[in-house]
Length: 382
Image 1 (cartoon, rainbow, N blue to C red):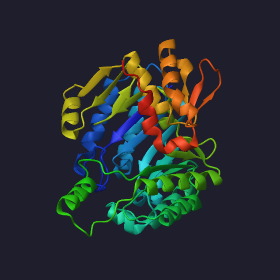
Image 2: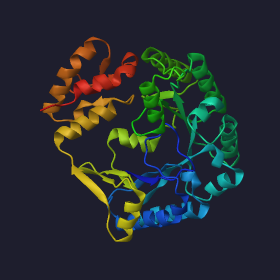
Image 3: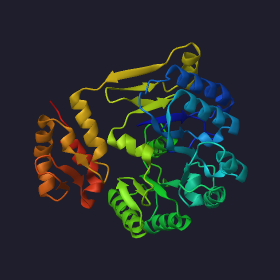
């Protein structure tokens, strides 16, 4: 089985924190959709496996018209072998989810909706330059339920400047109250090139005393573990560092990224992986469309050697509750990983389960907040 990712880079406005490739040039939507379908035609049959998941991400896929979404899904099914019962996700901004929009989705293969809620504080939404309100997120979930959707995910962000633990708890409790099947959570980051990064760079350069205070690492740690406690108490499974799901509702598409399943990426800035290599399309909508229209595929590619394959597995598998299966590696990498992991095992940060000679390694609860440091220590450096 394989995954199909389709990147929709359009947004009505740019969020302050977003580092993903996107554009507000909505007049290019139809030309871009035509290019997407043309790329799928070019790449028909590239995946010998059936497509088990389709994910429309962005950007904001919900800014496309119903006819444009239908065109994309028709091409996806024509040029790929889509498995019966495939998980099909679309990302939506809450204020796009009207009764007509939700009803339109029911005539498409979509069976999972991911809402960019981010926070239930209107003040923090304005800080992010989000275009929806907290009440619109609640209404969006109600509207999707009324249309018959049984698999809804929401995104939440924590760690806003000046945010307190009580503020974050209120967001979590509101998320629980609307009862989504899946919740993805992220700490606010100040990524270079984003409006948020530039805002704080200017504050620091000018010594502006009125700048909102960034949270400390200790505050971030407390928020993270409070999140885990509250969601697990409500029956959510913490199956990946940033992701929680009701039983049976893990994101099958994202799980594919974490367990090494091949995936095909369509659209500007989209990435692909086929075990042997990975590739990525140009992150420029004009160059992307011009290349596709000229019968070319504007992308770069790199082959993956054994060292890289091992390192990739360390950095994705250890993120999950399933852990890192050492049995998937040759003896060279198994022995290296066990040797480097030993101090963390002794310190109670990693646990070994299964076969003692070729165990599965899993991060303990105490290790989750320092996971990047542990993964870095297990990377193979020849």
